[in-house]
Image (cartoon, rainbow, N blue to C red):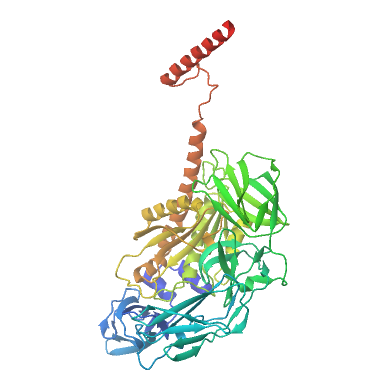
Length: 625
């Protein structure tokens, strides 16, 4: 790649010549997407992305003529049929013809099973993985079978439980059983019954009425809790926290929290403690508010490490911390420095949930925050906005994260262009511009051969006390998306409220600079954006799946446009912050000790005179009495 990058940045060539220097294949026809033997859910159309060696030839796929961009890249939207399907591509240049086949599998439309003979589809049976249940947990049993039947399931040593056919057209059945304190079952399959037909689940279910199990959260990084296994991020748990355990489904375990709340975490992040270990129950002690070089530190003394959740207010004036498995025994709140945090309040929100609220002083706002354990105590570091000079980038630390890495190169263009390479090229150009303006720039990686994990990137930014975090990406279509149904262009993503202004500022500069459709500022639940320590955004500058935009992304002048838009957006964000602070300083609030000789509005001077007369009358009556 080093040699290719040398060609890319040094040759004074057209976009077509540049893309030719980066081609990964000299074959007459190259199909980048779909991949060989890809499996797709039922669909009537699919896009095909790739390139041909001679863009002037006649190119067809399955008999349909496909337009080819001047670089040789193409994208087509073509009909497909269920089952094994072949895209047959041909390229004719003069009397020479070339052909290439790409095979995929399209799943058929779900159809009801025949009414006779009675049957149960084994692939549809739930539970599909082993489950370990405790009192209060719910066992869900479901399957697809012949419609119109009578369905039941049976747990060993229990009575039959009736199932409901909730979708008669497809023959979908389900039933539930809530585990009681009297249930005890070694790992066993569940027996299914449908109108005389019986089947046992491959997955095994166990039930226990023993003591609640506890575990320690383990790992090198915070562990994300999810609302459902494999999906729906909630908030993270710090390694070392002790948690209660609920049911297990496959490789996922439910962690119950207070207020009837809880979530799922991967079982590999749990270090099981011995049976009959004490349940987590932390006692809160003193709250100590300290100053720091860029904000404040708050120490909440606790008797043991437990899960907690942090939420900032929409106006960034408050930070709320919910501590689970905890009860309050806080006698002191000590303010060693109250220049940033005006007040700390703590209360017992629920039986086993303590709420700590940190309110900032008027005129202050939250730039970011970070939580860690200091012994058993919880250390919360809160950052105030940086002081912005007339040159808004001077002295600022900007963290640039070129998205992806060799093991996950990201989107692939029709010419074989890897997203990670383009991302790095744009980041390098932005780095030069930022440094020229006096900023300190840190890149998550300097070459396209480095493997830097996603969780490592936010940590690097926090360790270097970066002021902002920018993850640089480019986009592609989702499988099954029609490339010609709507226009595609750039979009800017944020996650936390302190990042929204930065996202809007950068999007505004993209709109001024790039000749592409604006897909807007968007909320994005991405790992690198969930970091709370600073404003963080993710840019999607263009689509590698669009042949014209792929050619643009390989053009150094277009890369410079993107880099300049990012830098101008950051400048605008910092300038707005400086102007807001200057405005607040030049408009002091009126106070009761304002003297009448100061220049004030006439209406206010009249009020002042009336007030002085009223005060004199009171003193006069007081002397008389």
